[in-house]
Length: 239
Ligand code: ADP
Ligand code: MG
Image (tube, rainbow, N blue to C red):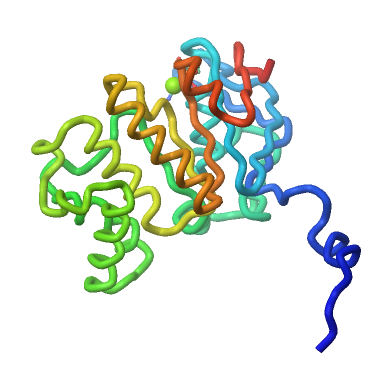
């Protein structure tokens, strides 16, 4: 067996952490009727493996538009976006959905859970899209709920849970496919400070203990200050 020297190891792994997402001069405009809104006007942004970044900026500045692009929920009007090494402009809609399912978990401000489905069914849904069989779906969904301290709420529906619990179900759903990147758009925006702090503690632990890259949008200076990197968006540009 040959063993590598530290120098060789360094040359192989490279000095920089790999880019999980790379956006270069990305623009996104929305057209309705004869009006065009340029929500992003040329943004370059890299999400490194394992990093923790906070996106801040005024309402309407383009933060959610950027998150939707990074999360493959939308496509840029122009510019280059690479996710997991794939140029999204080269992918069909089905391939883009597949890439999103494998690489990215997304958490919304308003939770976006199915109100009539149990916590475990909500969390198992992304695995259904990936063709995972029912018993394994259930087992993995239960494990993800346990990881967000909701092992005792498996059969509760969203309407039977507090806002903080609902957001933790949404985090479990984002995690169940074991993504390398978690994107959270104002995840504490609808929560009181105690539930917000619990959600933030979970996101921080996912990053530090599991190495999941976390990018979140927040209006809370304290939340932003705890991230390793702050990115300010203003009027469709990164300031
Ligand atoms: P933020 O998340 O920072 O509040 P958004 O990315 O939601 O900002 O919005 C940026 C700009 O794009 C705003 O002017 C907003 O009105 C506009 N916008 C966002 N989504 C749409 C859409 N689906 N159709 C038309 N305009 C939109
Ligand atoms: Mg927004």
